[in-house]
Image (cartoon, rainbow, N blue to C red; front, side, top):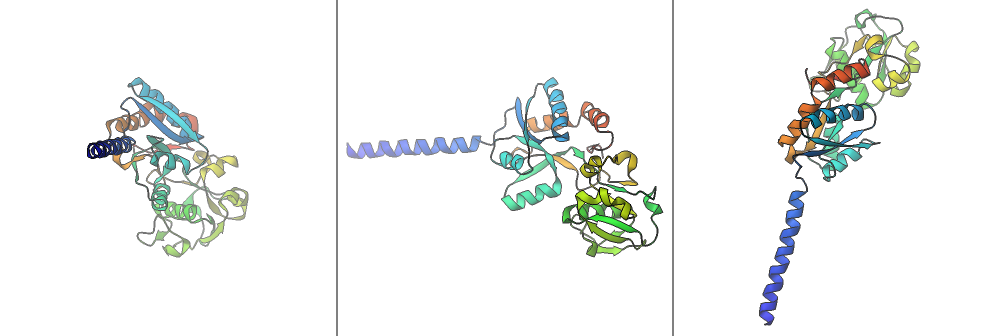
Length: 272
């Protein structure tokens, strides 16, 4: 009897462990009829709400969860509390995966908040004179981004392979002999009159009453590595329901909303 009781106990324990294993494997399963999507407040939230309307027309229910910071949407996705999120560009995602040992992957382009070059004196980037003073954000991410924009426009040349991490020390050709003055990104709009031109993030430009589409002398293109993405866990990358949501986001209705609502301060990037 003791031997039989021991065997029954082992069988019960194995059953419990198997059930626990099943729960773990199911945690990454996505419903075919409903998606929980994480966004940050603002344009990403507004755009995904429109994408949700398109998805609903095709039988997919989208629940939108709004976050107030840039870490939690990825943490929640990694932990299975979200099915996907839409708020970040590639360099941010790569750094998050490296820092947190996660395996989150991009599955579709969304928007670009374009960085622009502005000047109170010159109407074109080509008009900048030899030795012009250029205001550059002093943080690595935005400084490198501004240099990439200048390289893409043919104003400077960067060391090969440094496009996403460039600093002024990676400039190998500077035909106009631009003098780069590194400034706090948030303060550049207030210091624009002190330089010949400067690179300004969209959020800081809009906050200063500067319209990127109308006032920039050079605007970042959607070829930028800083385009934003819809992101999922790697195991869900090829799920049909994810493809359905990506198609809803990348629809004509969403693109028309972006163009009308943001007037060039946010660009739809998936057709590029």
